[in-house]
Every structure is written in C-alpha cells, then in structure tokens.
Image (cartoon, rainbow over all chains, first blue to last red; front, side, top):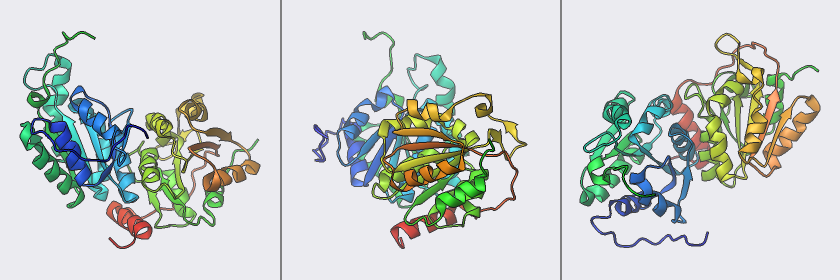
Length: 184
Length: 191
C-alpha cells in the first residue's frame, strides 16, 4: 500500500507511542487490533502506516482476544489496543488465555484517573487493574514516556516468550486529559 | 421442505479436507466437527462464546495461503455479530464461515434464538461486506458450500438451515492447551 513504510527511525524519548510501535516491531507483532482511544491515536496511525503490520479496527474489544488466539494458532503475534472501558468487554473471552495459554498483549490507555472530566469513565477505569487480575491477566504500568520502550518490550516478552496474558496500563497522566473544551 | 441434518452436512464439508484449517464454535458445532473426525487442524471451542469468527480471522490473516473454515451455531454467531463487520472490513479471501442454524440454543434447553424470530444472518453478513452470503436449505446446495470452502473467493458466509435435533454428544478433548499445541504442531511443526 502506498504511504506505508517498514523502516524504523530513531525514537525521541518523549514519543512514547513511537517507542511502543518500535517495541512491537522488534517483538515481531504482525496483527494489531484496536478499539480506538484518543491516547492511542498516534500508535494506531503508526501501525496502519507500517507495511509489516496489519492494523484492524474492532467493533468491540473482546474480538481482539479471539483474533490474537487465531493469529497464534497460525504462527503470528498480535497486540490489542483499547481504553480501560473496553476491559470490561473482554472478561469472558479471556478464558482463551487462561484455559489454552494463548499469549495476549493488551495495551490499555487508562481513563478515570487523575484529572478525568467524564465521571462515566471512572467506574471501569478504577476497576480495570482488579478486573484484569481476577481474569488472570498480569498488569504492568507505564507512567513515564522515557520508560515506554523498556516496559513495552518487557510486556511483549511476558506475552510471547512466557506465553501469558499481560496488560500494559498506560497512565492517564501520560496521555493527557480530555477537556471537553477543544474545538472540533 | 425438510431441514438438513447437521451431522451429515458437516461430514460432507470435512470429507477429504486436505490442508483445510477449521475453527469450531462451542456446543453442537464442535460436536458435529468431532463426529466428522477429531483432527489436529480443528480448533474446537468449549467457551469464549462469540469468538469463533474472530479466531478464524486471526488464523486467516496469519495463514493467507491456507483455506480457513469457521463452523459455528446460530447462537454463537449472534453473540459475535460485530465480528462480521470486522471481517467485512478486512475481506480475507481465504476465510469461509458456515453457520449451522437450528434456530435454537441447543445446549441449554432448545430455547429459540433470534433467527427463529426472523434475524437473517446471511443478510447481515452481506451487509457487512462478505463477497457471498447465502441461506442453504437443500441437500443439493451443500456441494456449493463445499466448493466455496475449498475454492471460493472469500470471505464467504453460508447459513445452513438444519433440523433442531438433540444428537448424541461427540466431544473433542477438553484441554485447551493441548488443542492449541496440537494445532500449532500440525501446522507449523515442532515449536
């Protein structure tokens, strides 16, 4: 496809989406599925423009659990992007990870944390780490941009080398807060 | 017109299956595929209801040179309707979905599903961008399903109307890790 590139460029320390994209590439992730979040905007764009990856939108987050299982059966690695509200949609599908030991790499942008302006994001955001734990998913936190490469690589290795379900929770402080005051 | 027998339909679709990769949705569809012959390149589900088509999509994208068949029931398909839109957005040419539609939740007491109340799954698939989506009612049409599975340009969708029989259970292995390992080993070699 035109406009696609498979080259990797040096990543600025503050450009955490590019650092995550670079980690996904180095971990040979080929299928990247997502329900978008504003916090994932740049990473989604990077994955779409990477000809070594298939980036695909989902109608609901649990679809990405099935996709990742199918990818692994076929010999490919997949990552799943969502915001914390989507974690609740995944709970039953996570039986694929716990029963079959499918690797699963979830990248979750957190809502309902510091500065949240939408109270309807708070319940699921607050419940996200515990919901994942109850469903058997290990969690890691990403708080600072300069740690993105190391943390994303660690998460990917837990998923694909240890063959476990892992969620990297990306702090709302890192993403920024949706103000509901911006012009459209 | 008499509806089709699901075991006979699945047996004829999986006969001489060659390199075909199969995902079987939970419940009767998995028992039907097992009755046709337990096979390492069939991944039968015991849970994760609504996921069968998405597992098929991930597999079809990863194995673009192989044919991938999802066999599932109407109840399982209804729980994952959104996955038809997700597949329609990708249009994998090697993916075929066969829904065995008895208009019932067969494992839980034969309650009517939405297809009994008129939901047209084939129309949903067509609207989502499947290249072909048909309702199959007659034995003579089963050969069309078979040629679609092995040679058709996907994604294809066949909603096969079957009798609401409670048939003997023919169970695949329950161990999900075993099912995963044997599939990957048969497809990819020793890991």
